[in-house]
Length: 128
Image (cartoon, rainbow, N blue to C red; front, side, top):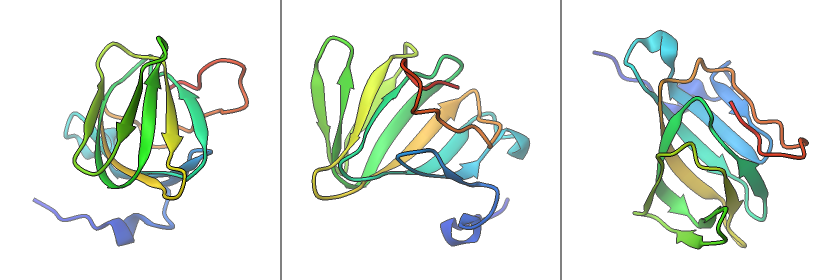
């Protein structure tokens, strides 16, 4: 057993600027648990087109506000206590709130290696 604190990750190689926010990689592949857990911050007033081709992801909102939009144009507001699941490697838009960052607990399966970063300059969805 061990305890890992968010404050201990900040400023380390597990503190990842992914373009429109931060991902604090609490658990990664080398931890040997079989999944990843990230404390994810999506900056207010940002839009990211994302698709995880190699991972399934579930995100639980712990603070702030934002929304996720599927490729059919369905928009789902996300607030504390809401969970969204990308169970089909879904391409989606992730938006930070108008007035607040969106803060998520993100779970990836299989686990992230830890250094993955989005490329939000691509014409398509950023993926890893």
